[in-house]
Length: 522
Image (cartoon, rainbow, N blue to C red; front, side, top):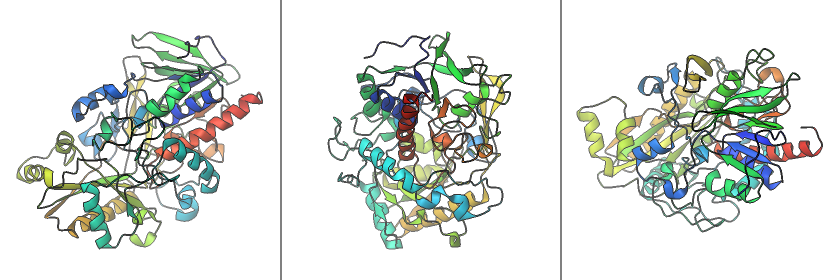
């Protein structure tokens, strides 16, 4: 383990957050011989600490700090303090994610070109494309051990998948399989194969699932070039008179504040906390927040168009047994405006345990209809809808007037569905029900979006500085030694789960930062 870096060491790269972006970036920089410090707001929980119980696991891992919500999304009514289930722990949401690892499609990097002008949407082409990203996707897939790539076999299908597969094929869908998953189907990278425990959202106790906690950070620490400091909440980024960032102010577990000096700072705190930090770092020189000359920091918050469909059958399914999301139908991921919306969506197997199912099936509902659905739990099959939602400038993160325990303004998360999101969700509900009806469901149930979702945008990547926050390498347009390394840099959201793209971008960014540092440009 490396010795701690001194607070006054201004030669280090400081990364805020240890998830898919920050944890990967930090490890890769360390492997390249660069002194790196990761500051993580949460505690460090190892695999043996994880709890295979939904409520207890949530209490252990979730980001429960107070937030405000507004907008017409149902989450703001049902869960006003939890607009997004984000992990507050070393490894970030890679501890909690289900493992689905899919490349963006070419048209999804160029949505404005392919979708055209869409009323009330803030579409913008990414300044990169699939061809440029392909070698980085390949590197990420190999690093993460993604199934169905590099000769790695797919995971076995559980009963939940078999029901979805049979129904999907009867409906006419063709691209149906157990997915490309960053979960070992056979031992790899000193990690065991999946034991089919079924608690993917609670932290993988076998270590089969890739996370920065188990598969990246230990490798970085082994170089002697990476220090991870848990329980360190970053409050503000400091800069000098030239506008160059010089360090970060953070509060430790006891609430004591420290200043860690830095050569380079990367923000990787997720799409709510990253803009919150940039906005809270306002100064006389940057009155609207750091990297915000465009006014785009915090804007274009996306969370994917989601919802779920459950089918109840006359025989047991036991959907909770086996890997949670090892099952996908990709046929609807295409761009086909004839369906009544632009972009596409996917179906992925999903199961919730009894506590979460009771909370999220239809929040606030009770009575015979609800209890009869819960009575059919053992006979349920479930699938999740994940589709491309439209970026909107008014869907944004702002600072509320209320402050947290450290004196930092809490975030306000505003989100309104775009008409395209609603049309896509309704189409998906219909098709999902058709899949289960095709194999004899006695009842189908549509559920609203959960507070747990993919958080994207708010520090978008753009070719022109006036259109976004960061350039094609995640480097802020305004400040050369300030980077963004998480899903907040997404220009648009695509239909695919975002983690593989976040990791690929982080690997590419590490190469860029190391090259610039070697030339003395950072």
